[in-house]
Length: 377
Image (tube, rainbow, N blue to C red; front, top):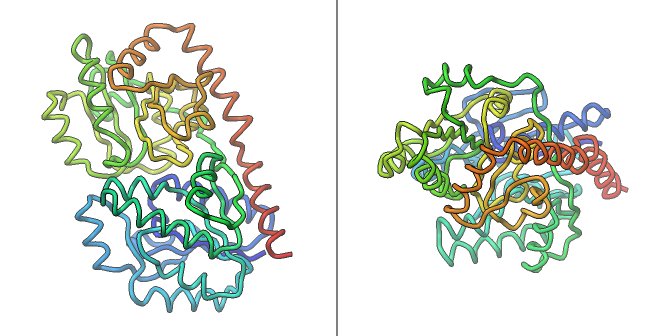
C-alpha cells in the first residue's frame, strides 16, 4: 500500500509526531510505502519519508501570539501537496490535523478519489472553548462532524473519544486504535538531572512531560507544588515546548519560581529518559484523547498522579494510577505516594503490566494495516 500522511505539527515534538513516527516504522517494516507531509519548520526533513511544503507566515504570526510553535500550510501548499500526491499515487490519504478551518492537505485529500482516513488526536472542542469560549467550542464541534463525515474511516485513540464523535453526529465508521507506547531502557538518574538544571538532588522531583500551555492545565500543577512546598521543598520539572515565559511568571506570582524548571523542547528520547530520574509523574490536563506521556511514565516505572478526565478509565485506571479531583487532593496524594514505598511498588507494577497489555506498538500497527486493507479492498 501507499499511504500519504498529512500533519500540521510534524515533526514538532508532541504526541501526534510520536504516533506518526511509530506508524511509519510499523508500516515500512512491513514493506508498505509512506510519505508524511508537514509545513516547513526550518528543521529540514527528519526521516526519508518526510517532505515539507511552504508554511503560512500569516498563520505563523497568529499562532505565535498564542505562544504556539505550530504552523499552517501556506497558500502555495495545496499545489505542492497535489504535486507530491501525483508522483506518489497514494492508496490512502491519512489526515492527522483538524483545525478551525480547512488546511491544504485536507483540501487535497477531499478532492482525491483515493480512500480517506482521519485520526482524531485532539479534543478540539475543548481547545476551542479555552481559546474562543462557547462560540469556539461550537465551531470545533461542527468542524469535527463535517470533516469526519467526509472520510471513509475515523481512527480514535480511545472509546471515550469515539463516543464523543458520535455525539457530534459523526456517521463515518470509527475505529478505536490506541497509539503504541515505548520508552528507552537507558534512563537518567536524579543526580544527572540535578546537575543539568542545577537544583538540590535531595528534593523530590515532580515531572510533567508535554506542551506547556493553557489547555494542559499547568496552573493546577503550579498550585499543587505551592501547597507541597509549604512544608518541604519539591522540584516541579516541566519538560516540553510552549509558553515558558508565561509559566515562569505564574510561578513567580505564586512564590515558587526557584522550585519550577521549564526545560523547553527536548529531543524525544531525551525527554523520555527524564522519567527514570523523577519521583512522581504529575498530569492535570483534561483535554487529552489518549495521554501518551502517562503511559510512557508507567512503562518507565514512575508512579502517576493525575486529575480525573474523560479518558481516565481507559488510560489510567485507579489500579494503575492515583486519580484526584482537586488541587488539594493532588498535593496530598503526591505526598502520600512519596512516603509509601509499598504502595508505590504495587502501583507501578500494575501500571507497567496495564500498558504492556493494552498499548503495544505491534497491536497498533496490525490494526492500522487491517483497516487500510479493508478500505482499499
